[in-house]
Structure formats: structure tokens, C-alpha cells
Amino acid sequence: MLLALVAAVLFTVQSLCLKLLPESRSARGPIGVIAAYSAMIAAGLMLWRVFSGASSIGATTWAYGAAYGVVFVLTMFFYARAMSMGPLSYSSFYFSASLMVPVVASLTLWGEPASPFKLAGLALFLLSFYFIQVLGARPQAARAKTDIRWLAYCLLAFLFNGLLPVVAKLHQIAMNGQEAPELMLVGFSSAGICALAVWVALGRRRNGAAQRRPEAALGAPIQRMSWSAIGLIACIGAATGIGNALVAYLTSRLPGALLFPFVNGTMIVLLTLASAWLFREKLSRGGLLGIGTGLLAMIAVNM
Image (cartoon, rainbow, N blue to C red; front, side, top):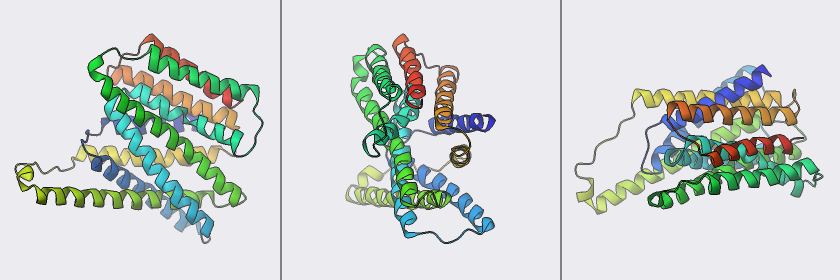
């Protein structure tokens, strides 16, 4: 359980570093950050592969790895945008509660039995959503539009983060349980390449717009990345890579009914405390009740 606690702490560090990064008004900033730490994780996995002397990678792993990389980029982009626009505690709750997506997939795609605990867990999650979004809603009408955009980013992060284990499980079914580390290598490599390509395309688009309207570019400051931002990106890469590696290692040594609720639940609790301490976020009674109900839902779906 100590390693599971370490993984939860690492994912907490990941979210805090994403929250602390300078806010970007355009999509290009978060995409560039994703490209940077995805490349760091891929480089670490490549070093592991070189020293382990692993065999060649199959075509199926390449295909699923490419899909994994695209989904990972979308996940982290929407999660970063959600945290930049709204409370860390609620944003991280939606992100962590995404284990409901593979639960639904297991009931629909793979025909697993719908046990009373799983059905109760799904019902509790819907109830937690009601508590957070209705009872815990912020009353300021001036922020209604921002809240809608924030909620959209949260739900998209929820969906795509939940699709990551679905892609991994589909790969493991197709490969009979083989080449799981290779999937991560191809996945993070694809994520880095995909994010870099989008970053370059957005840069060309911005330059083209500046050429069409040169008066808009006059006086625009040249943004340089600070050393603190570089350090945060390095922490994100290390926390994401090591955290995912620990969870992958523990999946064969701990029952999922214990591992996933413990890691995700601990992460939610730690981030809720950090949001109150570091960012002075105040949770409403509805919000606290929603997070507590969500934790019960995570435990129920894994029983």
C-alpha cells in the first residue's frame, strides 16, 4: 500500500504543478507543455527499453499506442484548461472520478455482470454530480458563462481520462496481456509528436494572422518561458511518468477494488486539502457532500 500512496501523492503533485503553471489565454501554451512532458516520459521509457533489451514492438501496439497518445493529449489539455478556469478541488474530482467510464465500458462492451454494487456506484456518482453542480453551484450570475465553459472542460477531461484505461484494456485483450510497457512507450511518444505538431500548426496560424493584421502584432510582448515554469514542467513529467508506472506495476499485485479507489480517493482528498490551504478555495456544503458521495461511488463500483 505504500507504493499506492506514493502514486497518489505523485498524481497530486502533477495536478498542483499544472495549476501553478502560468495561465495561457490561447490553446498553444497548454499544448506545448503537454508536448514537453510527454517527450520527457517517452525518453525515460526509451532508456528503460534500451537497458532491458526488450524485443520488437508489434503492429497492434503501434496502432493502439497512437490512439492512446491522442486521447492522452486531449485528456491533459482539457484538464489543464479546467483547472485554469475553475476550482482545483472540483476539477480534480471530475478528473479522478473518470474511472466510472471504464466501469460503464465493462458493463456494455465486455458484458461483465452489472452487480448491485456497480449500479449503486453509478447512481452515487450521478448524485455526487448533482450535489456539486446544483447544491454547490456558485451564485454569481456574472460568472455563469465561465462556469459553463469550465464544466464543459471538466466533463471532457472526465470522458477522455476514462477512455485511457479503455484503450489500454482493448490493447491487452488484442495482445493477450503482452506488450503493456511498449504500449506506454508508443503512447507517450505519439502524445509528444501529436502535441508538437498541433503546437507548430497553431504557431503558424498565429503568425499568419499577424501578417494579415500587422498592426495587431505591434507592441506584442515576446513570451519567454521562465525557469520556474521549466521546473514545473519537469515535475509534471516525472510525476506523470513514475505515477503511471507505479499503478501499472501494482495492477498485477493488488486487487483493483483496493488499488483504484485508494489512489483516486487519496488524490481527491489531498487536492481538496491543498486547494483550501494553497489557493484559499472555499467549498460549499453541497460541494463537500458531492465529493464525499463521489468517493463512496468509487469504492462501490470496484466491489
